[in-house]
Image (tube, rainbow, N blue to C red; front, top):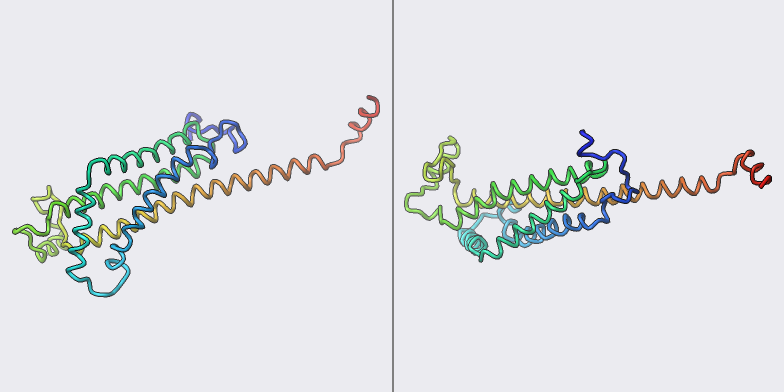
Length: 231
């Protein structure tokens, strides 16, 4: 990797090393935990769709659809706070990866990849699903759920959605629930990598202290003893 991106001379004991104890790490962990809290609040709604074999009632789908409409049609301030939280996470990654050490590239670089995957899942699946729910796509007079399922199986595009296939209401809500689960796993992966960086720094510090103790406790050489006597 080019030297302009990685400072190979920087170690975990360098003064300008931005490790697990830096403020940039808290800029990453804070938004990640914030998003995990939102996903945990959605878990009671997602659980019947993915994790049980009980039949899904229409009343439950109506309740879930009303809840998602309320979320998507919330005041603009909510979306702005969410966007700011996403931006704070990216800023934390960019700070840690500026003139990064080998440890930063390993842990923070992998965390950034997972973070980007999470943002992609959110934009591609969750936001698109919320827009369909808010628009009432499954309650249109010209929407036929049986035909939509057949079109999805044959991969035929619906011209009303700009060339995309609209799944049935239950299938679309299952896709959103699965996207929430994938997003939660990705964010947990970010936390695991940040914790791995802290553990690696701790082991490195312990090994350095052991080496210092061994050097202090090691007997001095005969020439060094003679020079001390002469002094």
